[in-house]
Image 1 (cartoon, rainbow, N blue to C red):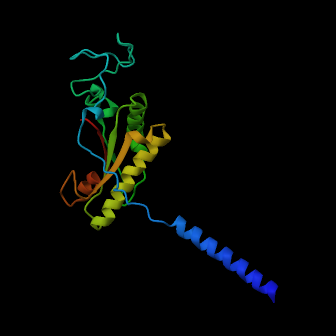
Image 2 (image 1 turned 180 degrees about the horizontal axis):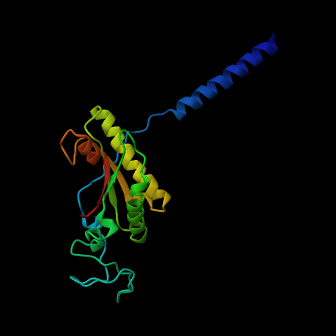
Image 3 (image 1 turned 120 degrees about the horizontal axis):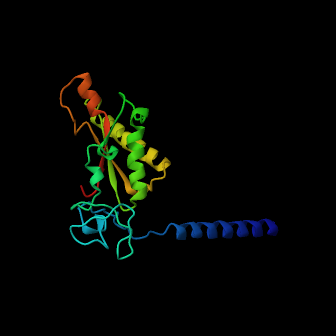
Length: 199
């Protein structure tokens, strides 16, 4: 009988100690506010032109007198090839089939060109903006637009782009390129647009 009492006492002590340990582990911690990201343009987001005199440019890969590697830039600090209509970097839209977020082979060259630019320009940042046509609910289209922008980001990551250089956002049906309600207009609106930060 006494042995049974000792076992129960020991068991009660173990259970009590365990409960106290659980309660100690569950003690409340002060709530911290969620981090808020400031998305206003700052000089920190602009590509550096260190080592360049104002109003001058250097060839990509050229070493400046300060010993830094130069990148040809215009007044905005961005590579002029981004605006050159004959450059593959001027193509900024990837179009999708209806209700799809698969990057088609027709647009892989565009994604590859931007991926190559991002790899050789580590300070460059882009936002991939997913869009849809007007068919479907607002919520569905926002989700589909996000999947489209993330699909482009995923292809770029597979091509070696640092994921920190690529931000994704969805506008759903809110930014149509063509507001008509025709199949050709819908096709224009099913896209992901690449926008360089600082443009």
